[in-house]
Image (cartoon, rainbow, N blue to C red; front, top):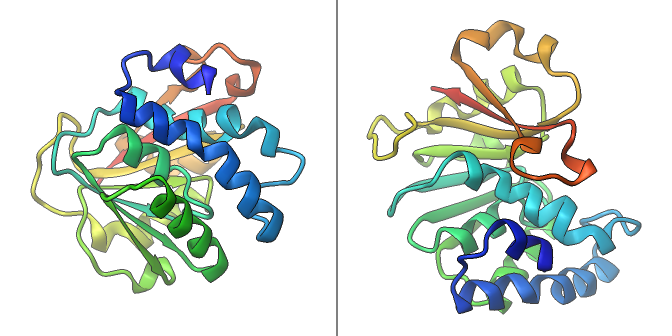
Length: 206
């Protein structure tokens, strides 16, 4: 939890309480339903929560922004972002029912009221959103094809509506076909830990 306060020192008491509750909740659920590598649960705050909040360093969602988290797994990046932006709405989607169950139970336990959940494939979700966020779910071009239908034409943020992904490693080949639409930010710009040395936020205007 200290690592979250290191980079986000202005959290409200409510946000601190919600972030602080995540470790025990995920450790408990992960023992029943494996949504995070068992070897990695000890790194929950750095590798999962803070990584998710890299999006919050790049884009500050304005009130009433609607965001879909596609392939949320156990709730990343959607749950940390929903805590960070309580005046926005987050819709978490995953094709694996047991993962959605974990995310739903965690959100309920910390009293998150700005999230909804759906067990379905991305192709089945027809709702409209200002942004779609995702965490290394699939290649960028494939993801863009799926979510194009979900991007609203109504603009309310400094960044035009689009897709925001957390990615790692070598991305040149993946971004080759969309390079004119893409903006990338290295997470090492904000976070000094070694884990973030090769991690990026990738924004695609759509």
